[in-house]
View 1 (cartoon, rainbow, N blue to C red):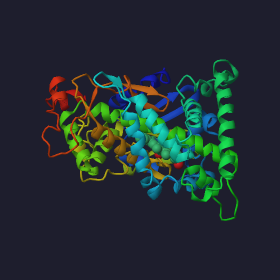
View 2: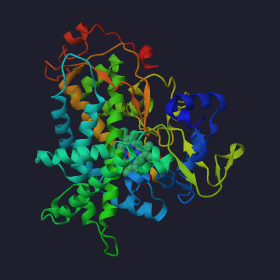
View 3: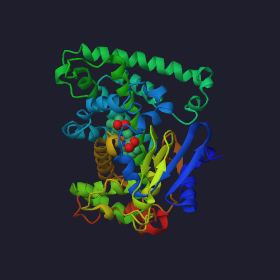
View 4: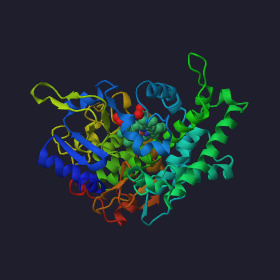
Length: 456
Ligand code: HEM
C-alpha cells in the first residue's frame, strides 16, 4: 500500500508529515524501510555524516545502475565515487560554465523563435529541447553544425535517458528485463553504447583534442597522478549520467518557473524589467524561489552501512544499518517555520540573500550535493532572461498545475501551459508600454495580481 502511494508522492509526504511529524518511517515491501526527515538538524546529520556510513550510490544503484552503468558518479560510493566526482568537477564548474552562456542564449533564442504565438501550448517539451541541446553541446561537443549527426545523437540519447516509471519496472521485477516491451530498452542501450563508444574513440583521435572545451574532451585528456587515463566504459558512464541528471531536471525546473510566473503578474512584471535591465539578481531570486516552491526532486536517499545517530540532544534517534534515510526535500522547502507563508511564490525572499545550505536543499547536500547545481542555476537564469526579453507571457488566472511524478522528478501535470506573443517593443525598462499593461495583457483580461489565490 505504502509503495503504491509513491505515485502520489507529494500528497503522501504531506499527509504523513501532518499525521506523524518531522520524522516518519515508510515500509516499502521489498524496497526496504525508509525514514523520512524534515527537521534541518536531522538533515544536517545526514549531509555531514561520514560518507562511508551514508551511501547514496548504493541507494541509487538498484534503479539507476542499469541505465547509468557501474562506474557512474551517481551509483558509486566512497573512494570510487570521490575519484569520479573529482574528474567531473572541473568540467562542470566556474569558468567552464561561464563560457557556455553565449551558447545557452543562442540555443534558447532559436527555440523561442519556433514557439506558436497567440495560442496556449505546453512549455515543458520546449524546455526539454533546449536543455538537451545545451547538455549535448557542453558534455559531448555535439552541436548542430552537422545537423544529421546532431539529430541522430539527440533522438537516441533523449530516448535513452527518458526513464519513466514503466521503463524502470525491471528494477522491481528483474525478470521483466528480457521480456517485450522492456527488452526494447536493452536494444536501445546497445545502440546508444555503440554511438557513445564511437564518439569517445573519435574524440581520442581528434587533432583538436587539446583545445576542446566539452566534458568528453576533458575526460579523455584526464590523467590520474599515476598517469592512468579513464577507460572507455568509465567515460561512457559519466556521459550518460550527466545527460540524465542534467537534462530533464533543468527542463522541469524551468517549466515550473514559468508556470509560477504567469500566475503571479507582479513577479512576472518585475522579472521582465530585470531581464531588460540585465538585473541577474532578481532573475536568480525567481529561479531560487521557483526551485523552493516547486522542487524538482522531492526527496533524496542514503542507505546506511552501519547504525547511526540522527539529530541532537534529547531528540537523538538511533537508526539501524540497512535502513534508508531520506531528507524530505519537498517538505523542508514548504515548512512554515523555515519559509513564512510557504505556499506563496515570493522571489523577494531571496533578493540580496543567499539561500541557506541545510534549509534550501533542491540540490541535496553534503559531499553528494548536485554536481551540476551551478550549471543548472546559470542555465535557468539565462533561458528565463532570454524568454522574457523575446516574448510576452500572458498572465493567467488558471488554477495552479498539479504535480505529476515522472521517475525521480515532479513535473507540472499539463506541462506548464502558457500563451505568448512576440515582443513589440525593445526591452527597455524605461518604456512604460513594456509592462503587463501592454495591449496583450489587457486583451488577455488578466492584469491584477492574484498571487495569493493562484499560488496555493
Ligand atoms: C534544476 C536542475 C537540477 C536539480 C533540481 C538537480 C537535483 C539533484 C539532486 C537532488 C541530486 C542528489 C543530491 C544528493 O543526493 O544530495 C543531484 C545529483 C547530481 N546531479 Fe543534479 N540537479 C539538477 C541539474 C543537474 C545538472 C545540470 C547536472 C550536470 C550538468 C547535474 C548533475 C548531477 C550529478 C552528476 C549528481 C550526482 C552527484 C553525486 O552523487 O556526487 N544535475 N542533482
